[in-house]
Image (cartoon, rainbow, N blue to C red):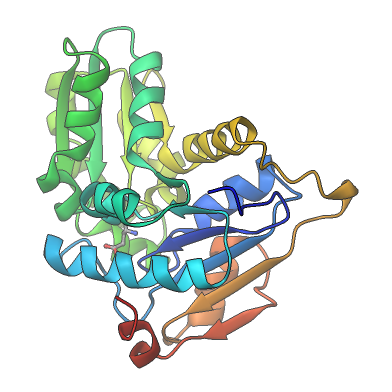
Length: 277
Ligand code: DGL
C-alpha cells in the first residue's frame, strides 16, 4: 500500500445512481478529496441478482477504479457491500470500505432499547449482512429486517411522497410496529431520498440511520489513520463520474440525486468492463 498518496482520488461505486447519496455525504465531509464514481447503470438493479453475479460485477468495477489510480474504494451499494466486500478486501491491496459496518455501528451506538430495524433490497436482507454485523458488535441486540423491493423503482421514478409511496411504506414498515425499534437502518442507497416520509411513518422517536452518511465518517477515519487525507491547499476536489449506460431520464435523475449537474461524465462500454477480472 506504500505507493498511495493523499492526492489520489477516492473511488466510489454503486449499481447505478443511488450511490450518489454516498458521494454527497463524502463531498460534504471531505470537500478537498478528488472522487471517481462508477455507476453500473447498464446492469442495475443488483438487489434482485444472485450473489455470484454481484461479486463478479463488483470485481470488474474495482479493477476499473484501481486502474484510475484511486487510493481507496468505497462500495456505496448496500447489496454489493453485503455480498462482495470480503472478497474485494482479499483481492485488492488498497483500503476498501463498505456501507454495512458503519451503518450497523451507528445503529448499535444509537439504540437504547436494544432493538434495531433494517430495511434494504431483497439480496441485502437475504444475505443477513446487517444482522451479522450488528450481532457481532452487540449480541443482545434484537434485529428485525425487512426487504423493500418496490422502493428503488419508486425513488428512481420520483413518485410523489404521498399516495402510493406512503401506502407501500406503511405496508413494509408494519413489522416494526410490533418490534418497536428505536433505530432504523436505511440499508439501501435510495432510501435516504425517502427519509422524511419514512420518518413520518415510523414516528419521531425512531432514529433513522443513513448508512451513507456514516460511511463518509468511516472514510475520513481510515484516510486519517493512513495519513492519506487530502487537504488540497484549500482547493475543492475534482469529481469524475463514469456510467455503463445513459438510460432514459438519466440527466434528470443524476442531477436530482447529486443536487447539481454532473459535469465530468463518461460512458464505459460493458465489453471494456467485462474484460476486467
Ligand atoms: N444500490 C442498491 C443498494 O444499495 C440499490 C439498487 C439496486 O438494487 O441495485 O442496495
